[in-house]
Length: 445
Image (cartoon, rainbow, N blue to C red; front, top):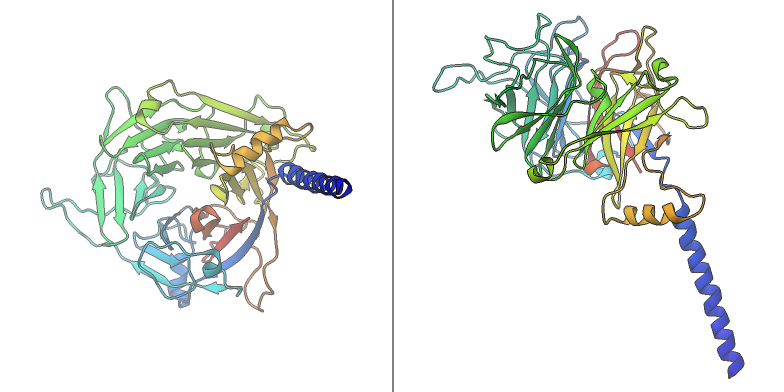
């Protein structure tokens, strides 16, 4: 009997040792690099109609299971009209609800994958009190974000190449336009600016909505004075713009700015970093805005992480006209996807690559627990705030039509989709200046 008990204890020790070893391997396994699949998205339209979707410097805003395309420039350099184009992100029948499709619904294995498309002309409504038209003027290089069922539009350049104020459209630098995806109507917010501050007209900037706090964050862009490092907050309750601390370095391109879990991120070159002036090194500046107005009453401070030029520490080139989009692989693991675009500088070079920056995991999530354990293991790091190139995995066999990759491209519109597990992009310009009239879906895991 003693021998049997001893044998059982020995077996238990072996099993427990195996479990512990497996757990150690699982914890030590790095979170990256991300894997991604690219699927081409087209819409079944006649060539004349499809050409109206060929554009660059526009915006894409995802609301529910639909992506809304607005503004931008056509192939002839003229501005696109104010019609809103909607592309369904699901392959099934059109759904006007705000349900979010699954990855399986979006990618059915065919290439290119056709999606439902709708075009909504702007209704020329007038303000009942003033008689003013409640329709924005055509624009390019503007900023957009989603707030519930609304698409928000701010700033940009008009046909004459200038930014607001625009007397014909009754618009100034503080104006926010709202398009209701349900009623298909435009509305306008005449916002005020805090006393003593001045919000300059701008373009190539970025705006983000924090729906939990019902605030709008604006960063950077270009003004008449040059590249801007300004940060602004608009409170939908007080109807006022409030100036926040400016970033240490201006980043005049919206494709280098992202907002995730209450933190604003800016990717930029920094002359103070060796190799950065050649766009091989980079700096990520970030500003934690807190989760409430009370937290923001404390002094907000920009922080930074430097990525010097180093063959042993891979990272992306800082670029213009790309996209920096937050994604999630679940369990609290968050990344910023940095995709495509062109190299900053005189020698313009368009890029076909996709990178990811692993963000610090959220508090009290499986990922945060794993990262805390990894930091205590010898020779193992959590991988937080590190770059890795996304491994693009081939999709199922393509038909004779369609492409497997968009190739080098810039100045497209992009937004997070699939509950944060994907990025939808539309249009853009190739290195030879050709405007594109298709979309791509990047799914990450």
